[in-house]
Structures are given as structure tokens and as C-alpha cells.
Image (cartoon, rainbow, N blue to C red; front, side, top):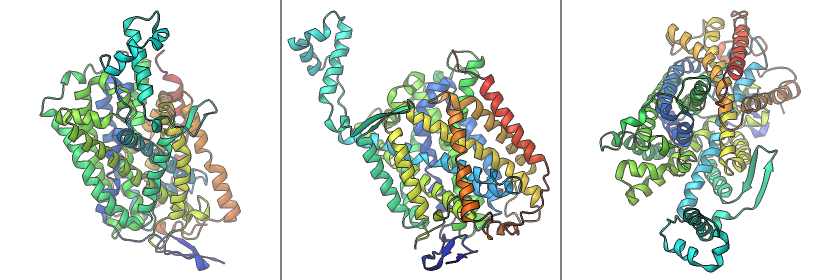
Length: 583
């Protein structure tokens, strides 16, 4: 049966399977609370940042979140052009590139999605670790623990420590006693295998707990964006307030050692090629977290008053992130120092709550347990946010002709359920990696951030392209000209960071893996456009620009967009080949 286009909703329905599209049910405060999961992302990579940037870590976070805040003004402008679209800045920016190349536009949408969706798997893996620590903790033994002393005296263990020094013997004893006392739940493995040598995959309790958390998130969001926003507000208050406490209290209770902020040099102590590579690589990965509040504009189609709510939501979310990222990163480093920030529990995220308990209460068990609950809630907040935003990107991609048609569906509550199922299934696969080892965890992070930096570059250029090609379209918010120019420059800088920094995290070939994954959109788009749509875009796709989809308008920007693409590729390759990791 012939498709029916709902111009007010941007949704597509077909015959009896018609759906009403997304519903206008929230204001800017609802989007703000959905985006309030972004500050929790600092807790995911704060340990890895300390290991990479050393004493510069707090400065990296401050610089990165400031860049993200400046970029938000460009996103606010282009989002205001499209009151009938969801999916975020990638969808709004892709319309600018469509006149110049059919493949660049879907690339922006695709890269934004695969940058966002791994938050589900990474967040679930860490949250599962906290839950496991609560229900089946691994016991800790000291050299003078009775169990260790008994093991050393047992004649059956003499051969294991024969010829060893006393210190080595104690280490062997602690390892043996710990292994014997570890709950069976922690060692249970359903399957274990190597994935093409990139990572060792283990499917066990972390995977199953993480999968259960994903299903809970799906169930909450099945009720639509209004229900999601209400849940996020409650969880957000339980997370944001403790994060503010952790960011402020150590500066007043004597917990901060200001010597931990110096010297301002990268690990290795020198601003040489290797030192700059680590610093720029740290800025690269920080952007995955600090820029993420742009998710607030994913809900333009669901705002009651998109003309004003769009700008308010992203600017408010940005201010919250500037405050929390700066405070929390500085307090952690000031309290823990470089040695503390590089401890395994901080790097993998499972020891962050214990550290926060020490920072604000001297290690009080009650406070620490409350903060452990806060960490789980913070991760659920981030997971909810990621599914809400990334599923709407998939949904709008299906509506606008970039991605397969099946994604352009909503249920009776206005939730994009088929896009949500796609997110869920994809992330169950990623969870097998994220739940296995830290190497796979950071490899996923690095590859997804390659996509994120591509999306950011394309969208920061899209702002000035829209101004040149569509000057007559009303803009509820118009960013200052100087800021648009600065943000265009930041787009190139982000590609430079991508070229330099991708190899710093997880795998030296992460840049190429990320670019390869980005190219997967080509067969997907070609199938949708030439097989499903017979070479035509949906008629409603560019209605917000007063254009029909087959009449894309005049290319007033001329050769400038192509020059921007060429310069972006050049700066990426320069960064990748000139800057190298320390030998």
C-alpha cells in the first residue's frame, strides 16, 4: 500500500500499519534532564585520562568541555531550522551537505549514531561490574591475614614457594587464597574466544547483567519521551547533586593536594613529539564525553515550542557539563594524584565510588555504599540518554531516506521502537567486547570517537553552508558570526585530534578501523536510496528549507564545501603520520 507522509510529525506510515510519529510532549527542561546523563561520562574515562595525560588531565577536561560549549551554539542555530525533525545535530547538518554529495549527508548521520550507541554497552559493562561487586565481592587479603598465614604454613603448598623470597611467597599465597575465596559467580564463563586477535571475548555474568540493564532501559523508553524525561529527572537529581558534592567538598575539607596539578608536562616529562601525542590523544578521547550534551537537540520534533526550547536545552545542558566536568576532574586529580588515578579500579571504573567515598567522608562505609548506588544510577542515566538520542537518529535516518525504511516507525506512545531494538541488538554484540577486557573497552571507545569527530567536523561546517545556501529561512536563534567562524576552525582541530589521538587508545590502527566502520554507510545508503526509494528522496525531507526533495536548491557555497573536505582529510593525515607515540 502506498506510503502516507505525516508532514507535521516527520513520521512515515503505511496503510494499516500507520503510526502517529513522534509526539510533542516535552519542553526544554525535559531534554535537559535526558541530557543530564552526560556528566556521568566523565566517570567512565577519568582513570584512562589520568594514565594518558598525567598531571595535565584536569586541564584536558577543562579545555575540552569549553570547546564543546562553544560548538553548542552552532548546533543550536541549525537545530532551529528544522522544527519537524528529530535525531540531533547530525540530521540537521546533513541537509546542508546533500546538495554537494549524496554520500556525505548520510555519513554525518551514521557517524553520529555509531559514536553515541556504544554508551549503552560501555555503561552497562561498568554498571554490571558494580552490581557484581555488591552481590559477589572478591575478597581482599593482606600479608598478615589468617588465611594467607595458614596457606604459607600448609606443607602441601611448599613446592609452590620453594626457592622464592619471603615477599614473593606472600604474593603467591595472596593470589592463591584470593582465587580460592572468589565466588563462583565471578569466574563463571559460558564462552571464551579470540576475536581476530583484537580482543579476548568472554561471555559471563558481566554480560548477562549488562544485557538485563539494557532491557530495563528499553522498557522505560517504550512509554515515550515524556516518561523517559520524568524518570531521567528523578535519577538526574540523585546523580547531579552527589557529583557536585564530590566536585566541591574536597577543596574545603583539606582533601586536595595542589601539588598534584603540577608539573604541567605530559607523562615522560617533556613537550616533545611523544609528549604532544599523548596530550592531543587525551583531548581526542575527552571530546567523546565533553561534547556529548549536544544530545539535547535530538528532541526538536518532540518539543512543545521548538523555536525556544532547542536553544534553552542545549545551553543549559552545556552549562551543567562545564561546571561538573571542571570540578569533578579537578577534585579527583587533586585528591588522588597521578598514582591514585592510574589504579586499576579507577581506570576500569569499578573503584570510582570507593574513591569518592574517601574524598568526601574519609571512607565511611555508609557514604561509600550510597555513592556506589549513585554510580550505578549515573551509568543508568547515561545509558537511558544514549538509547533515547541514538534511536532517534536512526528513526529520522529512516524517515529522511538515509537508512532502511523499517526504522521509520513509532509505537502508540511515540517511541521509535524499531530503532530502539536495532540499538539494543547492536549493543548486545558490543557488550561481549566491553565486558571482556579493558583493551576491548578502549578500542570500542576510540573507534566510536572517530565517528564522533567526523560528525562534528561535518556539522560545524554545515552551519556556514546553511547560511550561504539558505539565508532566507527564519532562524529562531542566530549565533554570532565570529563564533560560527571559531567553531568552523574547531571542526578542523577535532579532525586533527582524531588523526593524532586515535592510535593512543586501544589499538594503533584504531583510526583506520573507525574510518572503515564509517564507510559501512555506503552500501546501507545505496540500498535504501536506489533499491527501496528508486533513486528519489522522500518528498518531505527538506520541507523545513522550503525545498522539494528532488529539487535540492542552488549550490551557492560553490567549491568551498569541497575545499573544506580536502583540508580536513589533509589535516587528519598530517596529524596521524607526524605525531607518534613515545618509544
